[in-house]
Length: 156
Image (cartoon, rainbow, N blue to C red; front, top):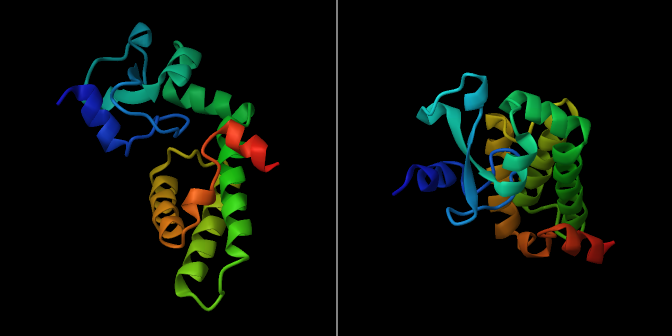
């Protein structure tokens, strides 16, 4: 298994920056601290990224690129949109279901973290997101969630 394939798997099939789904065929290797700025090729400095993020990031560090995305509200708005969509979907479920309450609490926690400026790539946010994805799938809400911008436009 190649280093890039291992990184994709380690990142749960998501781009390190935008969290869009990727696989080893469409992922690119990116250096959190670019080689042009003194970064090395060590495992801890390399991440799997989608082509769009990798090219937009250029010679920025990972933190600079996150700040750039936050200023453009790329991570924030897309992540919040997904949270609010799931919260709206919960309205049709019984509030007596314990999974309903747990999912609602996780969504509210994720919203609070994102509004506090914590990026989606933060370990706590990733942990919460994994549980949200699992619970929304168990409650049959995942299939209704828009998968991309076109699907979101269709729901508008």
